[in-house]
Amino acid sequence: MREFTEQEQVRREKAEKLRELGLDPFGQRFERDGYAQAIKDKYENVGHDEFENMTDTATVAGRIMFIRRMGKASFFTIKDKTGNIQVYISINDVGEEAYNLFKTADVGDIVGVHGKIMKTQTGEVTIKCLEYTHLVKALKPLPEKFHGLTDVEERYRRRYVDLIMNDDSRNVAFTRPKIIRCIQNFMDNQGFTEVETPILATLLTGASARPFITHHNTQNMDMYLRIALELPLKRLLVGGMEAVYEIGRVFRNEGMDPKHNPEFTLMEAYLAYSDLEGMMDLTERMFTTIAKDVMHKMKYNWCGYEIDLTGPWKRISMTDSIKEKTGIDFKASDMTLEKALKLAEEHDIPVEEHEKALGHIINLFFEKYVEETLIQPTFLYGHPVEISPLTKRNPEDPRFVDRFELFIGGKEFANAYTELNDPIDQLERFEDQIKERELGNDEANDIDMDFVEALEYGMPPAGGIGYGIDRLVMLFTEQETIREVILFPTMKENKK
Image (cartoon, rainbow, N blue to C red; front, side, top):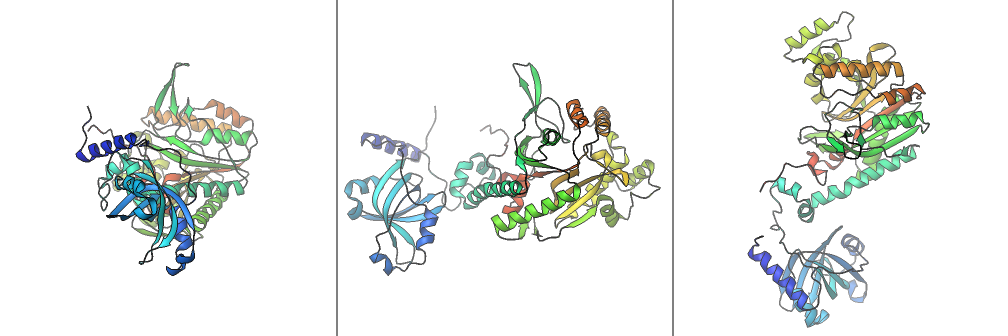
């Protein structure tokens, strides 16, 4: 049996009284012709006295956020998706029946208002109510006005209340789709085609990550929720689509922290006849397009840093970046695995059994000494082949691949390749992944023989890239935790 607070009980009694008056407490369709912010913008510069000769009206709807009752006249504020607007209501304008109905309203109720546009003596654009319509009785009170939801966990669990009370959360919620739409327009204008690929997969491929496993009852087999978008999109290059991208959810069965959520939004794009340089140019232009067209600025305060997206962005190899910080040259001709292992020991870098390869040790040095120092936008390229199973080898030094990661504020924002299109090399890389799994790497890829066969038909030389959309939105909205940019982030079970 549910128990209600005194205030909740009173609201339920008011809902019953509305029914007795022949009114539906939870409303019907309501036609409106205006929104709060547009009305305020339109009349902001109109002088108070000019309204005397104006007959402009508006019909709006929204949630009551504030009420100031003054006997036979009152002020209240309603909030729609664009913001707040003040309403003046008087018994002389709406009549006794409608005014008495208004007097039963609570903060949180949803109402409709038709009235004349006016401006108060203090200069606030206001609607003088001529018709008042009850729409929805809120059975629960909103949080206290000045504090809202103070428990951060509760903000994420009850995002609907957070959106009502927290304008910053609303701004992020509306800005995110604008950023994604900008990306789509940008990619479409570059000649890419947006596609959709399967979420359910029978193989673990496309990234290094632990999967979520589900079960297909009809086929009686386990399946993975996809951890990446890569291999289906590259199959489309084989099929001749040449320039494709997808924005979609992927799922990785990993921990949660301010920068990671188990399900997140990824964009991957593949362009035939391009390469690493092409992906760098595409990325820099896409970020600056978002900055100019959506956010209208090039500098952002993010995670304690001022980030300047003005190009050109820095480009540096992984080995050169390590050499800058430590003086160690992992590209030296006399660098061996034994020497690298000794250097790791001297620098207190633990090496797991499956990481006992020169490329893995290079990456461990990068993660310890370099990654968090890459604050301004930086393209880091030249990754070891051991950590890049789907990337084309560098023709001048086959120990490394043509790959880059974009780092901003010490965090990875994109991962790009000159795509591996050699089916023989690809199969060998897959086989190496299986060996790593046997040594304890539970994030190693499966062998996708269908993809190998697709490459045997011939995939054009190509550039490919993946972007973490959530982290990108975090940067542009200057949010430090991923939970602020995902409307419904994954949460621990609430056992209250």
